[in-house]
Length: 88
Image (tube, rainbow, N blue to C red; front, top):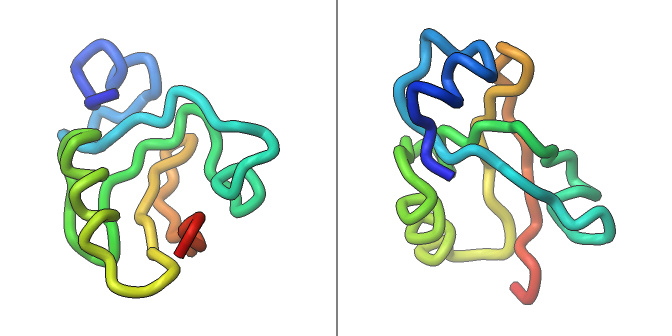
């Protein structure tokens, strides 16, 4: 879901103005195996900032190759997570 004022407050992300909030992760899926968790805020794909879930989907759809580097915010900390794309 898009990062809005309510989520920004709930997740203690006052310094961030955009991103896609992860609301669920399949425990048996690729994202979970590679470290993506519920409540993470995805802020960039391969160095390109994203503001909405639609922008996240578009950015991943344009990736050439089988992996992406995501900038996520978790518990107030920014970190990079490499994720292999399913079916790539």
